[in-house]
Length: 361
Ligand code: CP
Image (tube, protein in one colour):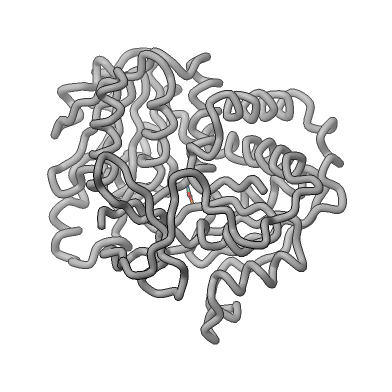
């Protein structure tokens, strides 16, 4: 059974196949209008969303399938104490594929262990957002014509920005990539991502951290802006201190290359002024539309890959993962902190990490 929980669940060549399929769908939408006839998508959204949920739903409808689900956990039996594991066992009886967004890190991984149908992670806490990454990759491919030999600036909330974490992992696999991390000290990448980029540096990917946009604007091919994620802060005054750290305006855009593109997963608050929307380099609304096409390609592909597949009687943990129920993940935002799940870990560079959220044990 193939799921998409982390961007690296897809090989580089599989990502290429999904992007090519998305491009074929864009060129021939009627040709794909019935390929998922009879298939049902369940959208299980425990956290708010506009783009991701609606693009998943419109993607399935455009493929000829149908959609069930909830957009607010308050209207589901979660309020009665039902676990993620039981919820997906139940939904597996009603649907053919699940897209799940959850505020707990690792919840979609738990879902994939208990579902009898493919599970797609539509965003888990501040951890990962692999379908936004596919959206970003399709947009970069369409706007820049390639996925390699690019300099990307990631700007804003790199600590809680799950789209940044997933895109860094995905882009690190292409040749000639330079990444510039633009954030205040308080919003630097989380520990597990800093560890990841140290490993990537050894493989030849260039990274550097800076504190201002201005010092790097002229060298960027892509500027990936992000919102400071108010909902993830436990301390309101800390949010107030960093919320206006970076604001992209026409003055700053003047220093950028004429063919630089600005991406943003959206929603935005004030980090890109409205005047920038009229700049042809502002690609963030084109990016939104690509999200629907790439999710059409992803769901069609996953349904084909899993045709006739049956889940193992005992969940297949995957390579390098092991269960140790005597250990505890220290991350309070991890699904293992609140649900009675097997504690699953992996080892990397002598450290033991939680498989659900990557926290170091
Ligand atoms: N980009 C993104 O995940 O947007 P939503 O939160 O609106 O789904």
